[in-house]
Image (cartoon, rainbow, N blue to C red; front, side):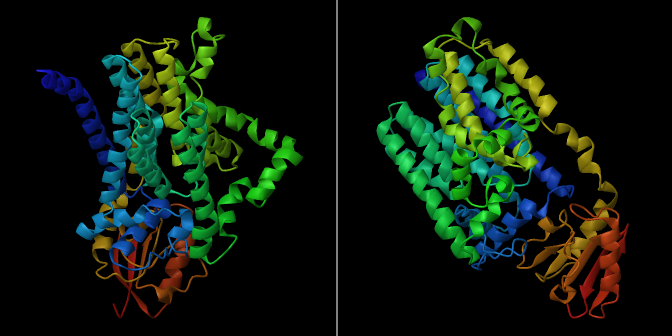
Length: 479
């Protein structure tokens, strides 16, 4: 009888997670089918994983480097096993939907470990799934960070269960997703040490610091053949210095420069976006504000601090919104703070119905559900013609096309984009040139595409093999 009761209790959670997987998978797949995915980043990762599955070096024709030279994301190699079964970009959407949704299960476990009621534990799972970033980042192509999100939550679960093996597996999984996540692991180690979980904290601090150094100083330079390649990722912090060492020096030598980067209107808006869906649980009740126990509940933020600072100091607006993946490592620790405050009964709201209502309101205000009735339908008038043009590409020869069409053609070694700066590319390296003159796409323009059209029409190596609704496919005569 106990097992039946436990099954019934978990049935709601199973339904919640299953429904989330379904919604996220349908959303990302539909966006892709509508030609709203982009080569940057879905095309990059899909091409790399495909090449690995074909036992071919994953040299990205978009980046011009080996894929490990990008973020040292070793996770691409196990993901390629799925492509060996059947090569399809929809595997990535499926993995992403599962990885994002599974976080709700670990949030539930963490809530129960903190002795919250069944209703509150399930409510927090819903709060996690309704956090706008979860839905939005699922639409932003595919990123390995989503796998790290659930792995971070599982790492905390493992600590609470005294599961050292599970904790180590979680750290390895997190680190395999991206080199920079070594900083998050190290910060998590500091937090665990403060929480008196010294063994787990020391392991995370050592492992995270070591992995970050290995990724940034060995793996990335090796696969880009450039000892300064890590600075490519520092362009967003160019005003602070041209290296990690220079930035650290400026922390002490020129603190006003750092403070200016932190305290500005853009960052205030970012913090508001980040926190408003969870304000009901992050703002303690007035009577609890001056209690030491209340502030002890905020200790998990130690682990989120490096990511938060990197986002605040960056000059890239993509790191200051709820659309991109950069804020994902912050979310687990915000929710841990809320779990702590709920345990101490210090949150503004505690009744599940009001908490869910708040989450629903912020979800529909900040989640990009409306894109499916507006932005994502922008190229619907050429959808059929684009499909037919792609169907005419019979080989794995090189393709020159737009950023939105490219992710449908990345199962080949060579794909380049018809974007600004590509005017000097030699067309003869490609077997196909596919242009949508009506919808030039990201980083392009009608004028640029007409320039490419004139150039390929003058090239005796190519012939027009398909044309409809301003969609034109040129193929090499030898193909």
